[in-house]
Amino acid sequence: MTILIFTVLLLAGAFIAGLLGSLTGLGGGFVIIPLLTIVFKVDIHYAIGTSLISVIATSSGAAAAYVKEGITNMRMGMFLELATTIGAITGAFLSTYVSPSFIAIIFGSVLIFSAITSLIKKDDPIETNHKSALAKKLRLNSSFPTKTGGQFYTVTNVGGGFFVMNIAGILSGLLGIGSGALKVIAMDNIMRIPFKVSTTTSNFMIGVTAAASAGIYLKRGYIDPGLSMPVVLGVLLGAFFGSKILVAVKSSVLRIVFALVIFLLAIEMIYNGLTHQI
Amino acid sequence: MKPGKTKFGDKKLEIWMGNMLRYGVLISGLFVLTGAVIYLVQHGSEKPVYQLFSGEPLRFTNLKLIIENAWRGQARSIIQLGLLLLIATPIARIIFSIVGFLMEKDYLYVIITTTVLAIIIASLLL
View 1 (cartoon, helix red, strand yellow):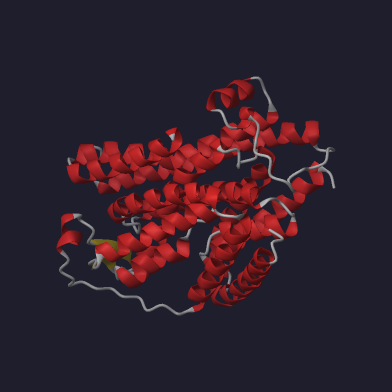
View 2 (cartoon, each protein chain N blue to C red):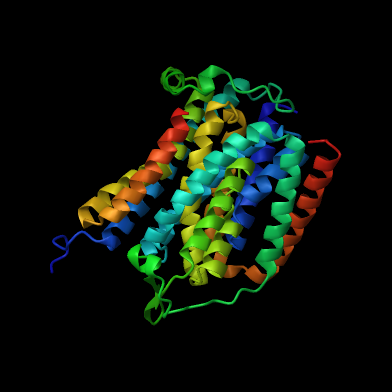
């Protein structure tokens, strides 16, 4: 296989990852690591570095649109970035001391967890009478645009949300993913904010979280231009195309298919980790 | 109030940040694409070696060397520069928001975002 063919194949794989990631809201980074390590037999350290870069690309691209629409809760995102960036740096440093096999096993477990949570139908809480003093002081209570005008909402359990965000940051730095699923859980289930706000705010934070560990990975030489190039371009094109056809696709069916694919990839990652093939 | 004379507020900051992120991704994507074309023309027929981790050479990890080599038209250094710009995009977004919060006189958030920036800069220096 020549570099040209390798690049074209990787570009196609990354395109599909970006497409599925944006259609299902799970993000492209998820598929990139199994794709690189299992299909292309790339070393897991390179895979993590490459994935982090693609995560920044898709997050920034999508955030540009969401922020303008005013759905993202900027203040909450920035406050919680304190937790995720500290976590991301911790995770990036931990990755030096943890064996690749162990990383593969944690990765597989996080994948299964995310696949399951993506299938669970979430209730969409719109709470308007929480009286959290911290949320008020930090100006986290906000509103988002709906068809009938602005919908006000309040935020609760700021401390709990901050703690889970810290874990999300550690996993992001250790595994090279956006940890979007965990971020949404922190905001959706713990801080009880509307689903649409938590997904867009999570996406807003992912770029900054990943940038914190990407710098460390770049300096350690885990980010290779020849590998990252097709992945970044493919994921960006896929995510852009996905956002254009989003309305025409039945996302519920797609969600189930994607969750199944992720589940299988997760089993394979865990198996390879246990047998020390990664 | 006439448009353009309105007080600086969250809405304006959101539009600023949206544009900034969009251009950041676009510009870095163009760098990566330019480097990609040159790289594939020059090295397309060689064999890829990624099975074993050896770490990238200094010319792909050192900021000064990346910029110098990219300036000389080295394909992979141009790609790497594009990736650096991509990493810099969310960091620029933080700097933008510090300025925005200063203009809004929201000093609590000036402190919060400056701390986030300090954490990221620390990660780059460590």
